[in-house]
Image (tube, rainbow, N blue to C red):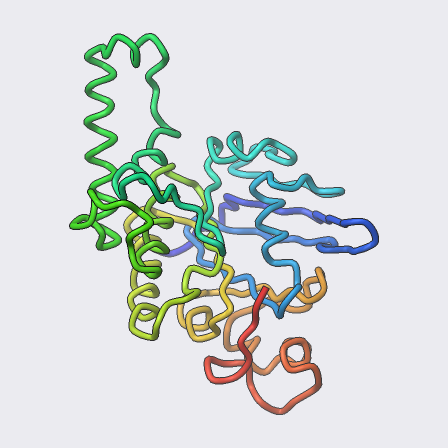
Length: 272
């Protein structure tokens, strides 16, 4: 889909320090509805800290986060998820003992309406909603290619499939904005190609606005329209993939010195 001029997520001058370490400094970001944005940088740049600030894991020392016009700064993570901001994690956090289907059903329950009374007494409304939740969960598993494994324990999935299951569970919350933290980590080249296609499909089919952290430059440069680059907690560059490939500040951040080479899929591999 084509992004609109409406900002669904607006981040204004957020900062976070841990003791004397300034992990994120004066970070700004505007995500138009329907956009696909990349957030990259070398090891220790502050990318995951940004995600933790956006999702309520950390509270900003300064600045604000607005989602669809609502100030969500400092809200608890479950409140932020309820407002429409969902994420995956660099280190997979599935419920390994539960089935693949139940992992996604849990995500769907963020939007469920039944209360304790309806749950205890299994009212018709409750039963109908549970059927709708299961149908939605199965549809999401079909989209990510895991429907045939719905009954298996999540921990038994191959690593790449666990990544896809995390994405399906995040989508089950019906987010306004989806944050993907290194979704290609641990995938082989063919899985990465399939992941690119999946992310683009999700954006189109679910009207998703996506912010992506990824160390694989091939993935980032191929699918992101604009990219923000962090280094030591500061934004050092922002622009289209073609603009950043020859940006001297970006090259210096990744390679440690000025260089004539471009930042592309065959050069620097940024990390956390």
